[in-house]
Length: 100
Image (tube, rainbow, N blue to C red; front, side, top):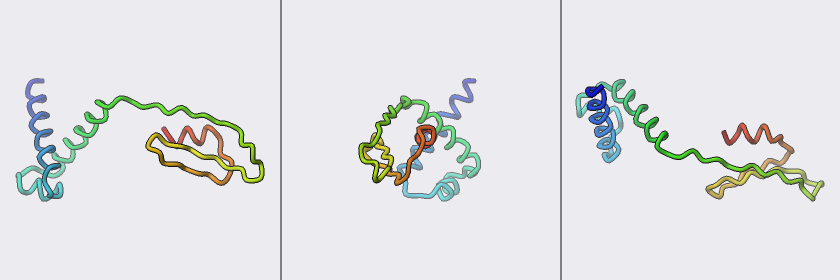
């Protein structure tokens, strides 16, 4: 296990180095004599580890009936301030599927 952790630390360090460079993944791998598929494997593990470090965010879904029945629409307000506007009625299950 110690070996795996050392390899992971080394590869994550290489990924950080690549991110700081202006090179493509392929060019970086050629320059550092790393096989591309190996780099890509570790890059996926790196991304998964980064995602695991972030707290999951839940968005509350509030549905309120529209007072204006002449133009039914649904609006989804995202945490970053962006809005999705649907010009036809959509179900809450559809909205839940969109944000999950």
